[in-house]
Every structure is written in C-alpha cells, then in structure tokens.
Image 1: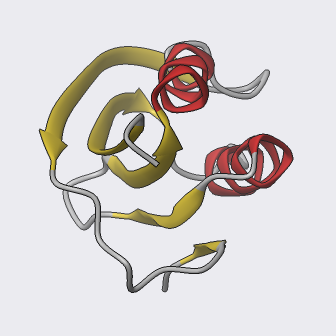
Image 2: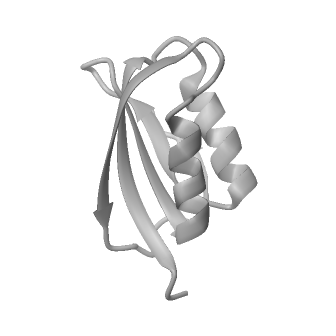
Length: 93
C-alpha cells in the first residue's frame, strides 16, 4: 500500500459536453482507481484519482488527451494524502 497516491486533477479546455466524465470513469475503473469526476461551474472538469502511483500517472496522461471530441488545454495536478473513504470510482453530480 506504500505506493498509494491521491491526485486532484483540474482539466481545462473544451471538456464539458464531450463525454469527458464518462471517458474518465471508464478509464479509471479499468485501472482499478478510486475517486470521482465532476463538471465544475467554471467549465473545467475535476477528477480525484487514488490508487497505485503508476496507475494514477497513467490516468493523468489519458486526461491530457481526453475523449475524441475534447480539446484539452491545461491539466493541473495537486497531490494530496490518500484517504480510506472511497471504494470505487464514480461520476459525481
């Protein structure tokens, strides 16, 4: 469990209305990550990713590209301490 990390990722660009949350959920579940993703009122998407460092890093790389219709302009990552409250990954509303 020592390689467990948690990252808050803010994605800017054309990232709402292009299936970005569904893309993120599908990829995160495939990697076995925990956390969630949601649209923010300012047009960005926020994802909280927790799991093994290599898998979280792979997910961040996927978020830099996004789904086909997305146009990612910026990805900002803040690393925080892992928490035990999340058991899966979901879309937050």
